[in-house]
Length: 254
Image (cartoon, rainbow, N blue to C red; front, top):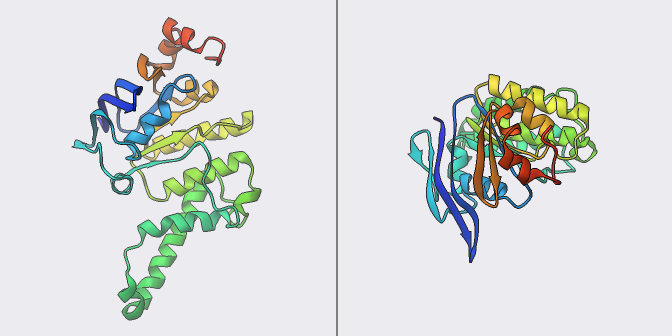
C-alpha cells in the first residue's frame, strides 16, 4: 500500500473530531472520502498533510511513518493537496500561477546565477515547459495567458490541480474540487482524475458531489461524527444502510 492510516485520533480540547480512523490507499487508486458536513474529513486531510498533529495513531507513507512531520517535508516526499477554497493569485495569469509554484523544482542557487548563467537560463526554460505541460494536462492549454480572476470556477479548480501536478505528486488530496461546478465541468473533472490515475498518481478525493464520487472512485470510505461507518466499492457504499441514514436529508447518493 502507498498510504496506510492506522487508528487515527484527533482531539480538540474535549471534542474528538476523528476517532480510531483506519484506511489505506494503493498505487494508482482513487479513494473517495465522504461524509456529512462536520464529519471530520478536512481534519483528516490536515493530519495527513502535517497541518494538524494526530492525538494518536500512525500515518505510514511508502513504508515510513510521517505523522508529526512538517507540511513542507511531507510535500517534498510527494504528498500534495488542493483546498476547498481555491488559493490562486488572481492578478497573475494561469501560467504565472503555475510558474510561481514551480520554484520547488529548481536546483540552482545564488552562486549559479553569477557563475553559471547558462545553467540558470536552461533551468528556467525547463520549468516553463513543465508548467505549460501541467496546464495542458488539466485541460487549460488554451488559457495560459488568462488572468486567474477571470477564469470560470471549473477552470480555477483545474488550475489549482495544475499547481499541484507540476510538482509531480505521487499522492494527491483533492478537497471539494467539484464544489460549484456545472454538470459539464463535473464531467471534465472526472476525466482529469482518470488522467491522474493513468499517469501514476494516487488520489484521495473528498467531495459532496456523488455524481463524481460514484463515477471515478475505485473505493469509498465514509465518515460520520469522526468515525468510519462504511468502506467498499461505490455499489457497496450506495446500498449501505448506515450510509443512507447518515446522509438522509443532507445528500443524494446517486
